[in-house]
Structure formats: C-alpha cells, structure tokens
Image (tube, rainbow, N blue to C red):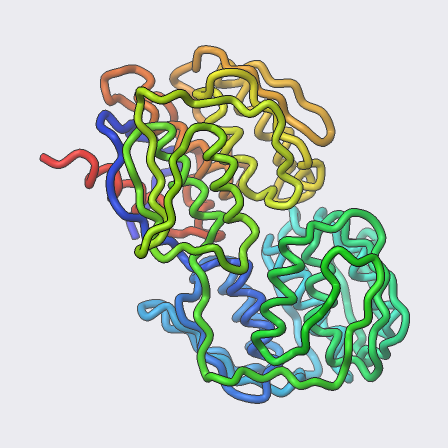
Amino acid sequence: MTPLPDVLPIKPFTKPAQGEVTLPGSKSLTNRALLLAALCDNPVTLTGALFSDDTRIMAEALRRLGIPVTENEAEKTIHVEGQDGKVPAEHAELFVGNAGTAARFLTALCAAAPRGVFKIDGVPQMRKRPMKGLIDTLRAQGAKITCTGEEGFFPITIEAHGLKGGEVTIDASESSQMLSALLMVAPLATAPIDLSLIGNVRWPFIQMTTRLMEKFGQPHLGIIGQPHSRIACGTRYALIESGYAIEPDATAASYYAALPLVAGGEITLTHLRWGLQGDTDFLGVLEKAGLSVEETFDGFAVSFTPVSSRHGLTEEDFNEFSDTFLTLAAIAPLLEGTTKITGIAHTRKQETDRVAGMARELKKLGQQVIETEDSLEIHPRPLTPGVEIETYNDHRFAMSFAILGCHDLLKNGQPWLSIKNPACCAKTFPNFFDVLAKVWKDSHPK
C-alpha cells in the first residue's frame, strides 16, 4: 500500500474512466460474522474478509476475550475458533477506537457472558457516540453496567450475569447497531426475549443481521417491520459448512459507482451482487442522476456518457442507507439542478457530525447549501479551485470528495482539490487511493 501524505492532491481524469474495481469485503458483514463465528460450536473460516482498522479492532477484542482468532491478510481469511456461546475470559479490557460496530457488538457479547468483569473504552469521539439505548436494555436483562464518564456513553464497566430473557424494550433510533447487537446475543438468554421497539429503526441493517443469524443456524426471525416480536433462545449457533464468504462492501462501491458521473466512462464493480447489504440500493439513486447500471456475470457495470445529463435529485430519503449520502452530496455540484438529501439526522452522531461537516466543505467549494437537522439542500454553483477538504478523521469524507476531485475542473488535468488526512480511509478501505490510482492509470494508457 502506497504511503499517503498529510494532504493529497487528487489527479483529475482527462479521459473517461475505464476498468474494474475489486472492492474490499463488507465491514458490516465482517464484524457481524466475526461475532457469530465466535458464538458457533465449531471453527469457522471467513473468506473475502475486510482487513481494516475496524475489523482488526473487533478481532483483537475477541482474542482478549479468550476466543482464538487467526488472520491471514494475504488470503483475506479470518479463522475463528467458536466457543459455543461462551466467553472464556472473565476479566478483560477492550479498546474499540472509533469503531461503532465493534463497540455495540462487544458490549452486548460481554453482557451476555454468564460471569466476568469487562471494561470497554474508545477514542474521545467514540465517547460521544450513542450507547444509551443498548446500555439500558442490557441493564434490564441483568447486566450491571457502570458508565465511568458521562451516563449513557463510554467508557463502561460491565459486570456480566448472563441475559435473563423476558420482556425488554430498546430504543435503537440513534443507531441500528444497538438493535443488531441485542439480536445476535439474544439466543444466549435463559428465556425467550419479548422485544418492543421504540422510535425509528433502519430496517435494512437489521435485515442484514437477521439473515446472517439464519445462515449461522438460528431460526427465521420475523422481526422486520414489527414493533413487537419474540426472539427464541436455546438454539446453538452453528455453520453447516466450515467457511463463510463475505460479500464485497456495497458502501465502498458507492464511490466508484459515482466515478463515471464525474469523469464519464464505464467501471465494473467486480463480484458485487444484490445480497445482504441495503446500501446496494444506492445504485438506484445514481440511476436517477443519469448513471447506467447493468448487472453482469462479473458484477455491476456502471457507465455514463458526457452527452447525457446529470440530474439533480429533488428529494432523496437516505434514512435506510445513510452511509452513502456523502457520496451523492460530494458530487451534487456537478448535477443539473438542486439536490435535496433527507433522513440523515442520525449521522450527526457518527464518526463526526456528517451533516454539518458536509455542509461546511461544500460551502468552501462555493456551493449554496441549506442545512436543517435532518437534511441538506445543495444548489450547484461554480466550483472553487484550490480547496483542501477537511476530513474530520472520517473516511467517508475522504473517499467522497476524492471522487469529486476526479472531475477535470481546470480542463488541463491539473489537481484543483486536495484531501487532508487521506490515511483515515484505513478505517474501512485502506487501499482506496491505490485503487483510484489504478483506475486512473487504466483510463489513461500511454
């Protein structure tokens, strides 16, 4: 992987984009599968797994909990020695960085242990990210959880006593990961869990979780769209085969799917399919903007010819696939007409305040932006060259604006936009800029 400078100028495409993009494994699926593999009664090898900051944090935490995890990055495999629902370690200190999935999943796993004392903390930004809904629910299930800083946030200490089952209520409106975490450990409870939901739930990620649980041996969970449901207990996690293949990351695909709208040409997103990930629906959003999308034997082929129009989107609700809203927002200056993005209030509490940050960077680029708590309305204006994009240590800012920078604004192939701290992409897509450089090279043969 090529070392990255503190500030990276983006080289525009002077010819239509061409080539194939091999995507990393899905972060959401890799971390879910790591947890479920740890709960299995047999060894499991994950293939096509993501190797990034977030997944390494998850794997290391499982090892600290006494669960053997062996990684082979060259082969993209992770081998997990399942512990049949047990947590071998009775004392552990876990560090989750700014990995929301790992934070919520590990909190639930530790609380579900029959005994033990576990301390969990992260970076300062993680201490601001929502945990209260999950903490309150796990307390009601019998865990003693002490917030050693601000109530409802990390750092926490968990004194585990297992999950007792019965009636439980959870508010997962701020993060669906809290509900996913509870669902995955619910079969370990001593009695069925009668679940009631409070507030809005982003169902595609919950459906990803339940379908993955079924693949790992759990009965069908009829929870999707239901305010009340029962989660059975007593069924052990098991994988019929010894391996599980992780899908390519649909969120990571959003950047390269948008590239033809910026530079023209055609890109093949290899091996990407309609699968467990709701973020694949973002391809439909790009189709409305003018992108041509075709599912082929090799994956999705996405293309755009410059003679076509790039359409602004009058109003698009991103509530159910919000990780991709930054991709659309970043290229909105190139679309014809206003683009309004809604359903994104919860992203103010992710790696950074993504709504405010996106508005701020677009304004630096000369755009007219109307910001509300839950939306961004972007009115295209001539782009301002020479801007350094602040990424707020958020990988999605770096990748989204890098795609915008591929637009040949100055008509001479010279960089006009730079990305600060491009290395933050290590969170989910460590070689993002190497892949972008390869596509540029494939598109500009000598």
